[in-house]
Length: 576
Image (cartoon, rainbow, N blue to C red; front, top):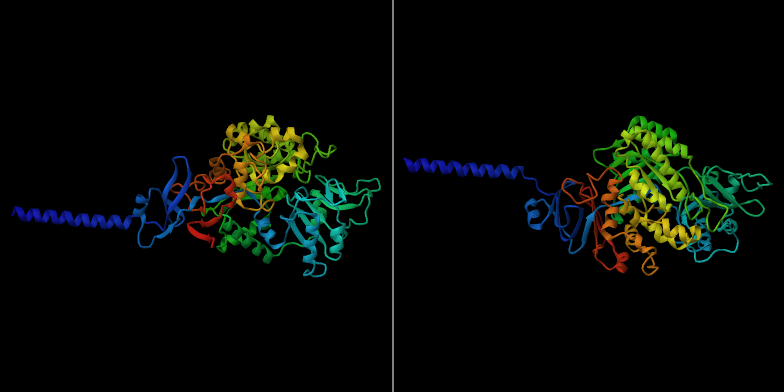
């Protein structure tokens, strides 16, 4: 009898354990994807590297040892062996222009032209296939990067005559690489009604916040600076739905190819908002867009202030910030300076937006929960914006606890203003590759003293206690994050000059540079809890490289290739 009881007891226990095990297996979470076999940098303060990462759909469910990760594997788990490659969190473009990126693929790309003649040749080639009267547009030229300058120049810029000769019947408008100036041919100026006007002692071409460059006879040279560009651009036909769709798709593809999984879109109008909504509803939003409302449209801002911020549950399209354009670019001498330009002593740049509007928008941002992001390149623009931010924060201190206001670019600062970023908790969103491209000629604009004391002050800002959001300002620069990473850690041009780098004390460490492209960029968008590091619970966005950017020799960094991009838990790009 006792044996029977024992038998029944152990049988029941065995059956219970089987059932328990069965229930446990049924409740166990298995990985959709298991990634292993290479160096994985987490940008997580708890552990810098891991052996493996397991994801379930679009979330990270494990990051740690390979042995433990194996427990999340079943027959349906996709295995991704890195084969010695390196993985980081998905890279975040911290300041760019998404549709500008796409349209740069559609229009004339002049980014790599090295002379005025190269621009003329590119336009002449496009004229051959253009319809009569069709506008020819492009972007990317930068006179300070040319190998030589033409003989006929005004205030350091070329004149339109050669361009007009090769395109007498097609209007041409070519935006400067910075986007803060443009170059028109005679046909375009004729359409705008500008060709036959002369100054005659009257400032005919005065434009608030802009400048039309004129020759000795008072006629336009073809160069339009800052807000004066609207004299021409208002006559260029609007984009079509078809071209917008194509440009959007090209921008997504360019992001994937460059390992970019999130994009801070610096200033979009209502038409672009409608396009993004459409792309999202059609399942084509395959890059996370953190959009800033353009500050040029006050009605748009007021509508959104009343509507409130938009953070969708899929984290694909977010609107909770405003972009204000407060000065111009250094290359076009539009950056607003405290002292005049070294190479144009009568000129201080341009205040392209009234500072009173900056304060008003800052107050609205605090009242309605919107982040304010202000473009400022010159030291005066940076100081004036910091002043307006500070005034707004003093008026509404309770709303300013976690404002995360930003200054976009923050390229040239007065030394006294550097510590103010940390004091006011203002985030500098700086594009390291601008230093690489601009520094060789920027010294002509600012002089050695201003360059050394206040230009591209990455390490001083980081040490003061603020994060830096990195990026490229595409299409001002190519979207390539490797170039910006290299500039961050080397302070050299992309040709590797000078030896030791410009102002080397301001270099970022590799850890700081990677963080500026991941976790710090996420922080700059209130998204550090969902992205920016390889941590359990965060989104499964990853970038995979052919070599270890954290240890490879500095001179080898620019050889790095993006091999795989994983977005929302799915492989969206493979470099074959």
